[in-house]
Amino acid sequence: MKIKEKLDMMVGKLYMYEKENHRVLGWNFVGETVTITTDIGSISFLFPDADQKLSEFLKVEDSLAPISNNFEQYRPAVLGSVASELKDVLVDNIRKVQADKDFIPQAQAINDQAKSIIDLAKLEVEFIKAITYLKK
Image (cartoon, rainbow, N blue to C red):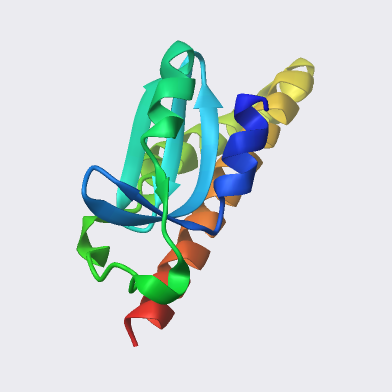
């Protein structure tokens, strides 16, 4: 089975990893790094080590283990780290487009990337809502 397929199958399920129960919320690749996002944090490793690392995740039956209450470890990454910088870039792009219409294709590319960042921020908000619901 391919690594991506294994990761897809892990999403939403509960695993024990390093003596803690983790509910896998998602995963992504950035370069050669694989990051698995769980309810209590993120776990990153290099792609060549993926088979070994994934074998360390032991499946736990949901009925046998409570969801972790260690929610305080999660910190929104996208909103906190780039919101101000993103606003500055977008305002600067508006000024450049107003001054030079040849800048429009580059501004459109930047706009597409900004939308991706905003989508990530929306995902974080949904995650925070889910964590709040699980704490009840």
